[in-house]
Image 1 (cartoon, rainbow, N blue to C red):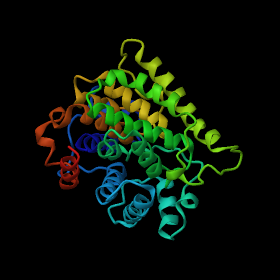
Image 2 (tube, one colour; image 1 turned 90 degrees about the vertical axis):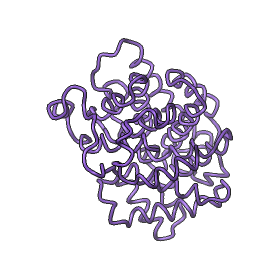
Image 3 (cartoon, rainbow, N blue to C red; image 1 turned 120 degrees about the vertical axis):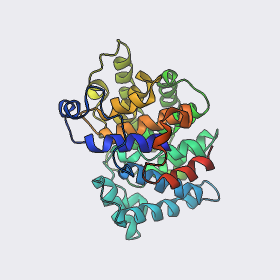
Image 4 (cartoon, rainbow, N blue to C red; image 1 turned 90 degrees about the horizontal axis):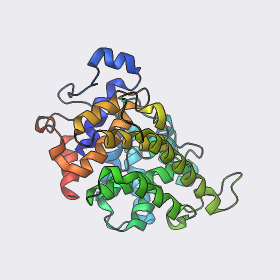
Length: 322
């Protein structure tokens, strides 16, 4: 939880900058120190806390229980005066319709696979434990309530699964192969008990047809991740091969790339993720979530803990799922 917030804060000021401008301002290593007291985060952390709060308030993990809790937290975030951190338009549009009481299958933005679907999903990997069916259902539901594209769902499940694996002791370098296996295993699995009739969209022949499109796109981006990891690290823009991260599968792959390349120096991983030409705060957010899941608070400077925005909420959730 703290790792994702730290990455979010470091990437916040660089999100709309070129790599050349970031290097000119911060040096070739990128931003490595939190700015401000508190160091402010973006909607990435705010929405992660929204998902986490819904999970903490849920007596059981089911679609019937979670949907109204997620709806409440998303709508509350959308109307908050603190929602002033360049939030994504998909989330704002969907939350507006959720606030009107529309069924979430109608409120969601059907064609969107933006990274807003999975930059907030890390708590699912912490709370769902070893029950991968529940992890998959919760991860996909929280994504689908705003982002209706199948790739948003598949990438969100993979992101939560990666967090779960890292918490269980999996080495970061082993993740690409394990995520690829998950794509193949789940390719035609449509979780109707969580997703209801979301698949019923123009041009979609069946539930399996709908969901397989998302898994196939995730497989393609994992191919690009393998290509990026194959040669020695050239220290170039991490977005160059795996993508700019504005969409969910690219945010996952580029965040993993930074985490794997700098597994021995998590702060450098965050700095690398923040020194990118794409969605720097979301990429760094996911990088921090992965390395935080792998190494815990020992990964980060002790002095950062009391300086990050929402430190109390992050502590509560981190302790609840430790």
